[in-house]
Length: 324
Image (cartoon, rainbow, N blue to C red; front, side, top):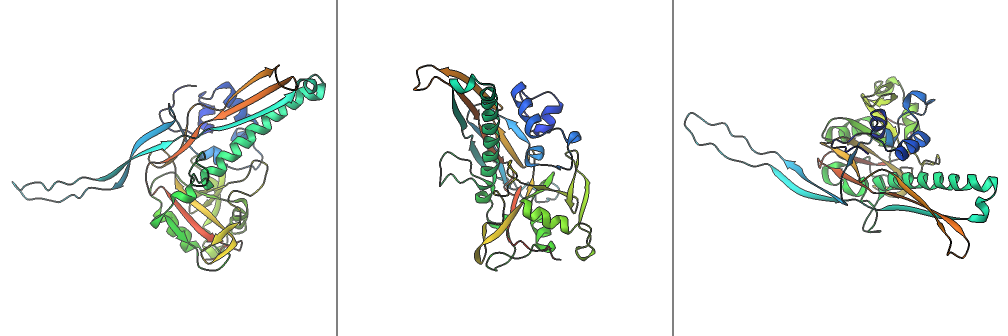
């Protein structure tokens, strides 16, 4: 793979020939080019930029606050100030997959397809797990997984929809507050499939000022837009809604709420990290109990928030119609 110093989406990498042969095969299998899709819309992997890094960590300086600028008169002393920063090291995590198929099975016509099918399923599961942990990962419960956006959003980067047990209907004013608190360009709204359907129902409604529309995006292709910001449904790769479904606790308790995430993507905001693309390897295991073939896959992902305010979590949203 060519060295990527600027984070790019998989769609951009595919168009410019920066994917390995294996990456390209995976991308075409699970994320076909936008031009060939039939109503699929944009996905997490279409819009999330990934930066190629070496090693198992990425170090950067995060901006926290601007310096103070004080005007002066002629021949007066300059008042010095420094901006507030912090040094951050993000660790990449190891996401492996492994499966074994008996050689006897592989010697049948159906068996030869079995190995390819299992390889495809394991890669799909890897992608699904990485996407899940990008939002929900928690290293305090498992030291080996990513720390996701849910745990990283804090303070002003949290917007509560209300205090009702089980959540409250999404209000336009609160969503605009979340968008306002997200600092940076290339903003998107990530949400679950269920909440995405609520945006569908609000398309063009005069009751909410026509804030939800269908339009072109900076990523290519069309998507639902809220005030011009793309709404990206986060769906399991098997079609489920288990990542950002209505299964969270609301501010007042219950477990039927969800969150959406307003994110500013790119080299000055939120981006994914990876060391190499999806890699795989196969070998025979002649010394195993059953003569078999071993399949292995590996992905080394991470995530970085270059700007502490590049992510806002809007939580406590119930499965109800969007209101003004």
